[in-house]
Structures are given as C-alpha cells and as structure tokens.
Amino acid sequence: MDILWQYQFRIILLGDSTVGKSSLLKRFTDGIYSDVADPTVGVDFYARSLEIEPGVKIKLQLWDTAGQERFRSITTSYYRNSVGGLLVFDLTNRKTFEHVREWHREVSEHVLPHHMVYILVGHKSDLGRDRKVRREEAEDLAAALGVRYVETSAKCNSNVDRAFELLTRDVYELMKMGEISTREGWDGVKSGLSAKALYPAEQEEEEAAAQREKSCNC
Ligand SMILES: Nc1nc2c(ncn2[C@@H]2O[C@H](COP(=O)(O)OP(=O)(O)OP(=O)(O)O)[C@@H](O)[C@H]2O)c(=O)[nH]1
Ligand SMILES: [Mg+2]
Image (cartoon, rainbow, N blue to C red; front, top):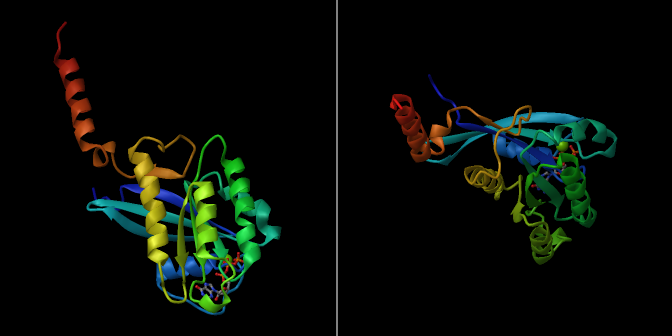
C-alpha cells in the first residue's frame, strides 16, 4: 500500500482581521502573495505536507478562520478539532498584539480539558518602519504564554515555512513523548500508518512479547 503521510495534524490560524492569516497560508501552500486580499468569510481550508524527519511525512490540514467578530460562531466550532494554532498579530498594528491574550484565552478555554499547541507569529515584518510592537515585547508575551515566537512576512516570504515547521515539530515531539495522542472522535491528530513508524523498537518488542505469550504452553 502506498502511504502518503504517516500523520495528519489539524492546525488553525487565529487572530484579528487583516493581520494576514490568509496571506500566510497562501504563501505557505501555493507560494503566492497579493497586496489585495478579501477578508475570509467563515472558514477556509488549505493543505500541505512536511517531511519532519527522513521518512516521516506529516500532512497539515490548515484551517483559516475569519478574524471578523461576526463569524465567531462559525470559527469557534473548528477550535476543538485542532491540535495546533498560530496566534497571528500584525507588527504594525498594536491593537492586534494586545488582542493575542484574548485569542489565547478564548481558544484554550474552548478546548479544555485538552490543550492546543501554539506559536506566536508577528506578521508583516517587511514593514519595518511602521513597526508598533518591539520584538522584546512579543518575546516576553510568548514566554508568558509558554510558546515560541517568530516574525514573518508573506510579502517577502520570510520565515513563513519556518513558522509552520516549528509548530509542526513541537506537536510531533509532544506526540512522541505521549503527551498528545489520537483520540476517538477527535480529528486533531490522525495516524496514517501503524505506530511502528514512530516507535519501531518498542513496537517490535511488543510484537515479540505477544508472540512469546502465544507460544507459551503453560
Ligand atoms: N506588507 C505586508 N502586507 C501583508 C502581508 N501579509 C498580508 N498583508 C496584507 O494585509 C491585508 C490583510 O491580509 P489577509 O491575509 O486578508 O488578512 P486576514 O488575517 O486573513 O484577515 P481576515 O480574513 O479578515 O481575518 C492584505 O491587504 C494583505 O495584502 C505581509 O507579509 N506584508
Ligand atoms: Mg483571511
């Protein structure tokens, strides 16, 4: 059987309207950027695969939410089935930075008793002269939330892949440690292959033990 990916992660983009969520996604999935972008209506869907380590391919299902308040009732229903979230703000718009904590709180409360893995993204780094949020402030917020921080530009294609890779890697590492696992009725993480791909040694040992038990006559 042809395996296209070993794991599928659902990742959601969060943040105020016009911070650049859709532009980040279009750059990441299609390699395109436009200075003219329509606001997202409800939720949009994108996808891309990443090879996180040799032989381990992860399919990312990416949910682009509308930042506009009037779509909130639609977007909240996508929080629960996501394993990771990009908390995006616009480096040239201070209000969007101040709202990050609210986004974090709203989403985190919504997914309880489970946890989402986040990364904080300061976007539009190409507009250096209009910057309204200092890097140190954003780093402090990221530290307070216990998440990574990265500055991106969809326009200049700066750090876009890196932002998604860092988040994917964090989810993957937590999964390897057993902190995140697939759950019945939850689509945040899906496995496309047996656990053998992730824990080959342990899996072989388990199989050997089962075999020994079977062949025991007592
Ligand atoms: N200079 C600059 N502008 C950007 C960048 N990314 C997005 N923009 C612009 O910011 C505006 C809003 O971008 P969108 O991607 O539509 O923002 P959004 O967060 O998806 O907005 P909603 O869908 O309403 O939530 C558009 O005019 C984009 O061209 C960037 O990296 N640099
Ligand atoms: Mg959008």
